[in-house]
Length: 197
Image 1 (cartoon, rainbow, N blue to C red):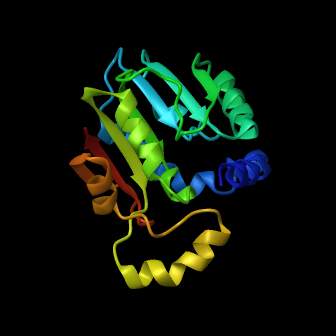
Image 2: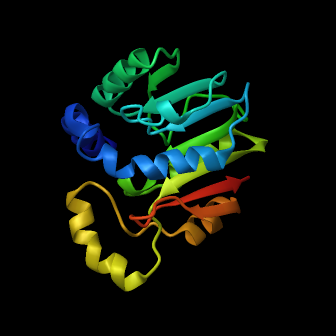
């Protein structure tokens, strides 16, 4: 499945920032504010994409972004240079992160989980690399009504994501606890959720 996802995002990388990106901008900004990132914190973004989170991050943090798509990372590098930032951007599979245990104060996953057929391995890796005193920020649409998710799933699948992400089930399967949760978008059904190990 990772090969299919990589190919899909390689294809849309050149147009992502002005097609899909703007519709998620408000949620991304609100979620980063909600995470209350502190100066000096080490932050990992899993599924960094084209780097649309960069403009909302506070200064003076140690930031690492990973993505499976080289073309998305190339766009992220352009965005980083344009903003005058110095981040570490790496090609990496979210289900096999090559960082030691408890490496980060915060792990961000913005609009990534619903783009994978099985998010559990990636979430377990996020749990492994976040500090015991750290937190994980999920920014995503989560299943609210089973019938609505079922109706919208065929269209969502064609666009490369899923409407069937259930936060309670994810927590039950990974051992995370919800610390706080807010609605991150006034228009779209997107939540920002802070999880703690």
